[in-house]
Image 1: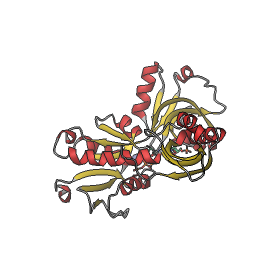
Image 2: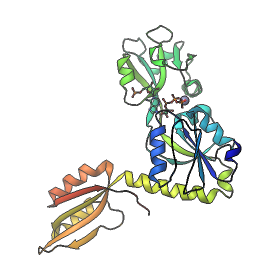
Image 3: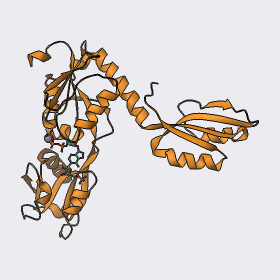
Image 4: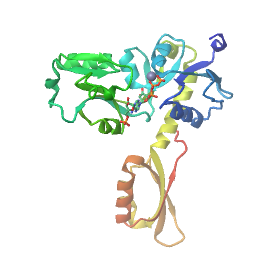
Length: 291
Ligand code: PRT
Ligand code: ZN
């Protein structure tokens, strides 16, 4: 650890697993220059006062909470399960999943109350216990470290409580979700004391870069041609950053409109634009948006 006592900001990310690659991409895409072989324990940024530590995701919340690390990237599920107090600075839009209770297809359990006196296998005992207590259900929690999904077929449990994203693990094991406990995604977390100290400035710089990148990832840049009379309708359709850029074209009565469109309503917007006479619609990704 002595190598890390140099006044640099310290961020912990998952060493090897689902969050490793997207966490590394995020740090690279906000312009940080560092080497990232997986076998290294830590890497120093060449162009920012930042050291990156690669560790198991389960250890990240505690490292950040006790100040060994200033920042971390980890799933919300781990923060809930470890029940530690850290500051969440940003949701990062990857590692999305839900913690669910699932039952075998042929189970007699049909509703939450039917779980009374049943056994539920999980690697998330704290989150499950809290949920069951809130709902007033008395079930036995079987604490497993992995392969939770096979517990019902081995007769170890009547139900499972596990993370699910695509749902295919549940399907393959003939399980169906009964109830969702929470949704989760990767978040940037910070030590609460660090946020009040001298490192705050650099944390703010990183946060602004991350927000700029995330906003850009959620948005497309759209350019189109249209008759000038269509402009007021186009303005209603495109919920642009502020106002769209409007440029007259060489062809009389025609304009070009440039704007940004949120990814999730993109197709809907394009369809409506065509209906009001837009043509030659060009769409491109945006690298960063700084407001
Ligand atoms: O070694 P280390 O402790 O660091 O890694 P790990 O094995 O504990 O974690 P890893 O890499 O499996 O997951 C890291 C994080 O990714 C989790 O803490 C979640 O925040 C997030 N995440 C997102 C998921 C999933 N989606 C996910 N589907 N983590 C695990 N799963 C598992 C789930 O447990 C089940 O076994 O994938 C299976 C279900 O996936 P689907 O797609 O079939 O539904
Ligand atoms: Zn883990």
